[in-house]
Length: 193
Image 1 (cartoon, rainbow, N blue to C red):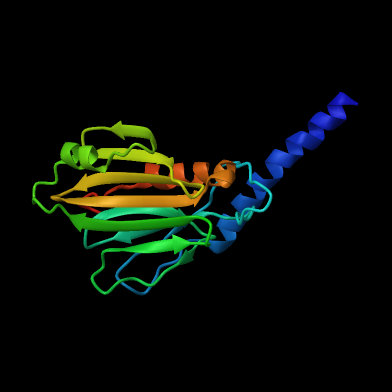
Image 2 (tube, helix red, strand yellow):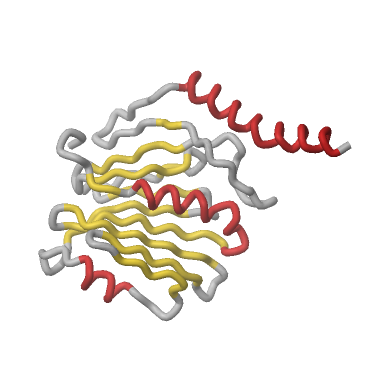
């Protein structure tokens, strides 16, 4: 009896990976017509999706490139992409549960000091506060039952930011996705600009 159960459980985890690989091969990369660039990559991360959340089983990650502030990151394909502002600051990606706002901004003092920005951004509701040489990350829970997470990266005298919010009770579904988005936030290399 146990070997049969093991085979079923093994198929439960292998089948989604195979499906994602087939989908990626069939879809290939796409480009958007405006100044932002978009490429698709298959997601191979197995996620525990909470019942009731709006995370489909077959999503993948799409690259967002912001040429004005010279940074890029990835966002999940199941989110609707909001209108791009005329000034090219960034974008909002949302499914009305998970909202990911990606944008660039100039430091008001003009020196893009990540340590000062980190000190100013911290609050009492934070559950995570991490700072490195050119970035910081802050996460926590607000009074409305939502989790927030912000990562800010210093980019040539400016800051690139990813801010994500989602209902805390869907943390098992959205936290791994948000972590991947934040891990991909980085400045463009000279060859990518």
